[in-house]
Image (tube, rainbow, N blue to C red):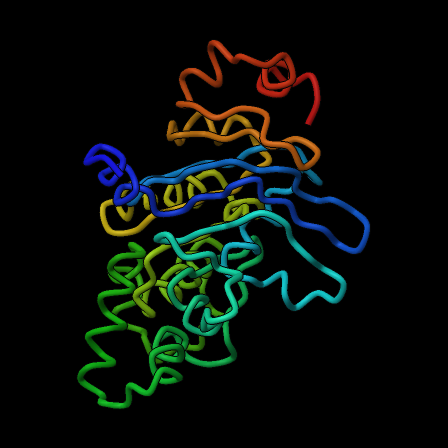
Length: 260
């Protein structure tokens, strides 16, 4: 391997090679070839049923929880196939955290929502937990809004705050990759903007993959972008290229609002 190839390998965090995923006989993803660099924000967009969520769930093997699923090809993180027999799935899911569309608080205080994961990892020292919780809430741009009411029940937070709390719960486990599955789909415009701005705050420390069905959100975020349609990776490129000079007619039709 040349020095250039070795440098490219080090820069690549996630690599899908001819990756396909099946629910029974249904092929949800077909021959996906995609590389995501370290500390890159990638936006995956496409209409419902295009395979976006399936791709996210494959990265931390949440698809394993569904009977009758199988895959073909490889899906690697740091050069190791996540489906290799020796992979510790519990550790994989810590390293690859996921935020879902619907923010659901654990039935406990704001503090304990964030501390729950580290406690499950064996951290019990109160001062250490306090530092972890504060850092995670700061990273999620929520600390200033909740620092004086950490003992309040988390259900008292607004929808936008709950989603940032969900992000803080993931960050408290110190992941390497953060997956977000339409995290703003149920939020008001102001909360949506806060989440979108937060992504660029976090990308220096994490590799981030965001899924959205909203082309306008993809344009606003203005990151490297991938377009999925009916399980096929149609096109990748900068948001500028995808929205102003797409290579595929299907991409052009999607970003112009002809379907989706």
